[in-house]
Length: 432
Image (cartoon, helix red, strand yellow):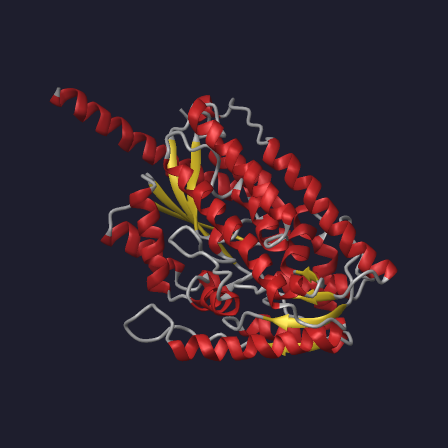
């Protein structure tokens, strides 16, 4: 069966992919103009639960060092920057995102996709990882950018709802960020403008949630891991803008049409799986093809929620923009949730999206995301009876990806799933 699957040829380009390339190209051109011509003020932020709406309200440019790092990996130019950071004293065990970004920062900030502007404000909006806190502290030390650390408390206690005090605590900090943005940009805060931006974010989030729900169909109209990463860049870089809104209108229309036509990303959908963990960016295509040849499509992924969850009911509220931004950062932020909440999210995906299996991609660089994934595999396999595969490589560093080893693990797993499927079909035939 594996031999027959080897012959499958896959193509992944659609209208959505082409539009994403166009609008993200314009975004990176804007970064280059800011860096080389001084056209605009840059604000460095992190993906998880970012308040991009505030930055846009001052016409400042959101810049995400994580996206820059992953782009270096996708373009296969990350390793020299990682090694430069190691020469500076960063450990082999440090986050490779951090090392690639720091190495690039000390190499003129020129990349194949943009020249990265120096930061005017370094807004650390994610405090769930001490490495990320220190990453932004280092960037502040290497530049003249003003540093602000937003403190987002974890949700404790039996309720998973943030308290009124939690919301107020975050809103007060957002008001301090507004003061910093006024000082740096030279512009007065325009509350009506923020409401308009938040309104566009609400529409964008609602369409993103609808798109993700479409993968409950069989066949799934797109791969919720490999194709979702195409949509994640506009979601984070362009959320709250007209370009971002138009992109998601196009993506939703394209995916709804595919559902009506019964089209999926592969010629035949034979397995549906949920995947946990970030992708191996330097080998994204090779990683995808290892699943595609088995007719395996990801119908849900936790990584596609790393910047926020919209599919379970959250919607920005333009009548209470600061409070809804705070609620998003507190409650609807994957990396601000407990491991048990992630278990619940994955289990819900498996049940409601009708998945056959769970795949965990554990990455060496990110202990925050990978810690406990061995226990996760045990829980889903033994407690819940869900076939679960755990594979390991890295999110950024190409030295930790072994295609042969990965292929052996994935082939063995899907051969087993294929065998179990044949036994079930045989038993159903006997019963009839």
